[in-house]
Amino acid sequence: MKTSLGIFTILVALSATANAQEAAEAVRTSGIAELRRASEHMIAPGSRNMPIRLPAAVSKGEVISIQYEISGNLIADSFMVTGITVSGDSCTIESKHNTTVGAELSDLIFVQSCKKLR
Image (cartoon, rainbow, N blue to C red):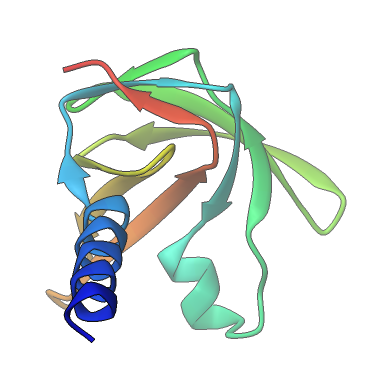
């Protein structure tokens, strides 16, 4: 009984560590990601993430160029990186901005293969 309880405790601790999120100042990316625009999600709640290409390295405070497609049109845009969170080998890159009515929205980039640099 004590052995199985000990194994269970170790598995829970390892699981919590594996899912822990950690802030990062810079990450190395695979160059492939998915973008979720907060404003697009608010307008079309069923909208999906849009595939985008990223630079190999992304740092907090940097403005990166991104391209995505909406209704068959290629959109070139910029993305101000206000935060980076790493969880395992994936990360979320965030761009927070305020609306004219004072609400705060976050556009998110989800990267599957990502490594913390600093």
